[in-house]
Image (cartoon, rainbow, N blue to C red; front, side):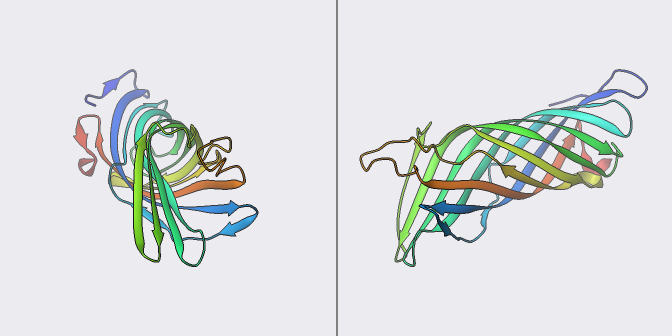
Length: 204
């Protein structure tokens, strides 16, 4: 998105465009058993475009549209591992406190709509996989987030999905595989805001 529009001496509306590199994990339980797994790295297809309104040089709000690659890895047993993820279309909204032209803290909420589901299963290192669009097994995700923005575009953000990844009522030929399954994704991301209005942020 393009130009910066000044509404007044202290109020500005402008767009920002960003890419993200995600590190995600989850505390997974199945039938009351906690299942561990390594951190998942998702470096591609994470974008956000936001409209920002700065009410002063110390406080602002933002509303965005994002595409996120969100998932986690867990060990079913000693021989079986699963990697699951969705591509989500999200609508983040939040606030910013600090120096709007430098470093500031931010927080907010997002609702995300899963578009594509992918699952990989490794049994003794032999892999099977499938993916499907608009799967019935996942549900609309909600999350809260907080982070710190640094000068010249980089920021660090933590996001917690308080909605379960799967629908507990999902039914397939084996029954309801997620009836007793719980997995809430958590994401730590490095985010690069590369455009602010029509200018690259490293020029700021």
